[in-house]
Picture: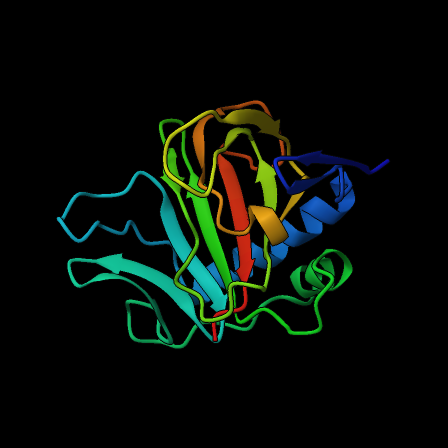
Length: 201
């Protein structure tokens, strides 16, 4: 049964996707990633990031020596595949906005991957929420403040959880400190998949 938690303006839908829905979504993502394979991006300074990334939708989010940005093509030069219907259904149910997402960022976390505290602010309309879907191993999600620094709170996100970052939480810093590798049997080789849905333009 889904439980809804509210922390620092973040809305956390616990157990939003049951096991069957998670397995169906992973199968869809596996097909999608044959069209737009995961890549290991580098920061503008050339440092490899610990997560591997891909995307679906009109835009993907890329990082390389030219900077962080949205792009309409996979680094290989092919267009991003469409956002799967299962993912659009989640957005339509929890986002509370009429606009459709234009980007579904796909992040894969291995045993040592993390995502430092950051803001999502490269989008044109910051009144649109960001919706995050967790699949696979548990991830320790940290929620901070709009301004960098100060106190923060952390919560373990489990497979099937969905987080909505809107309103006061839209520009709050957030990140993933670590994952509990092997805590889920959803992905045969372990790891965590995070889908992040955004309206870009």
